[in-house]
Image 1 (cartoon, rainbow, N blue to C red):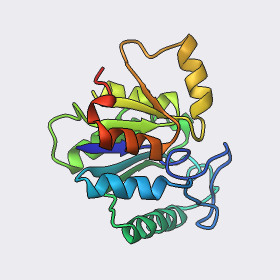
Image 2: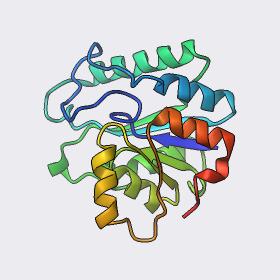
Image 3: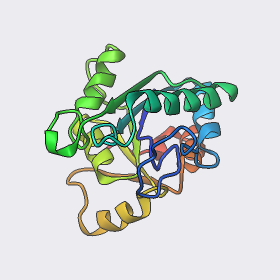
Image 4: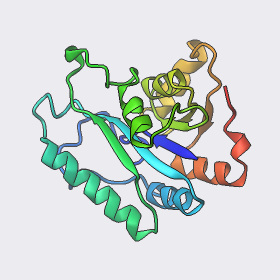
Length: 189
């Protein structure tokens, strides 16, 4: 199965501030191991991440590539692999089609894997825009409480995503544990 993840707040620590260097990129405890467990069980991992810090001039593509290389090295050391990373480098004012909650990043992922649709794939995120993008492409939305997740969970209680059933887990490790023990726990919308 294809599992698509947001990056900041899902895989790595995120407190609302831009991560502007490779040294600042730190995995959430247990997240790399969780990704490795998913890979070892035969699932493919893709990442869809908004990175407007590039357009804002906070860091360049070379720094972003360094962060992704660090993440890949850590995961490979645990026996896992990221199959594809799609990122949006644009400023929100540019009104591109790839910035979540729009689905351009997910379409890049779909094209990379030569899929007709993402129906049945899983989208794991910590924000509403992650969940909305995934749901719009027929992914099963999963919210983790790390990063912005607790705030997102509170807002979903008063303003749910119409038609979406969102599975909620404490963190990526808890999601991996639940999913690997029973894939049906991530309910289809």
